[in-house]
Length: 254
Ligand code: G
Ligand code: G
Ligand code: MN
Ligand code: NA
Image 1 (tube, rainbow, N blue to C red):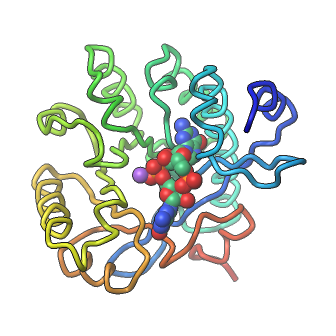
Image 2: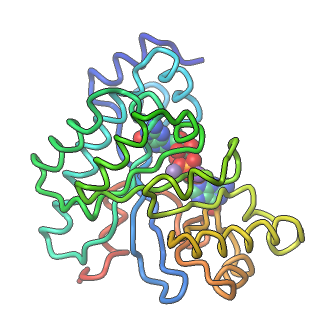
């Protein structure tokens, strides 16, 4: 069991680290994006996955500081790769509901982009249905302001929350990520196949790009490619990797 005091100490001692999972163009097989995923590199416990500490971090409000640290570190690393000559790809960050609803998200994004010099068009923020559905005037305002800065907006884990499809139209989103629970059985379960196809069609009609999560087999990939899915992510191409694993996967590596 992980304690509150351990998480505070982890942040203070700079024990969090960024792993990156490639996002791949379904047609060309090229890496077109990277999703930043937090890991805790604990002296006692080794590499700890977010499933073991994020719920507690949310409970004690520390998730905002973790998200902010992730944004700074991932943007800094990403800009360094671009400056080293790698072809620019999108950098996707998971934003917790608390962070999104906090007053200074816009300030944080502005500051980090200013400090790192990363092109706002290369930054993509992943939000969940739950966050968007708590839609107040403020949510719409924040999304529009981010959009005006040129930042891309994605809806994560699509299909798992309580959705109202009307918000897809109302919010200025760019990307829809189909949750991996639907992708799991697309080649064997006709219901999951139907849901996935309908989601791809609807997303494209609304001019949203579609990313399939959790692609593990070539059969799943072939199904997705043949039905027009734009991008995929999953163990089939790569697990989330520490930073040193990424350059060999980017165009421009020699
Ligand atoms: O990396 P992994 O698949 O174990 O991630 C598990 C969950 O943790 C996912 O739902 C993911 O969205 C979430 N997560 C990973 N990194 C971050 C982060 O930096 N901030 C937030 N808020 N959530 C994250
Ligand atoms: O909720 P979010 O989409 O941010 O979660 C990303 C999580 O999914 C990460 O923890 C990552 O480790 C996990 N993940 C990525 N690809 C796969 C996959 O192909 N299969 C499974 N089971 N999990 C995956
Ligand atoms: Mn995500
Ligand atoms: Na997801």
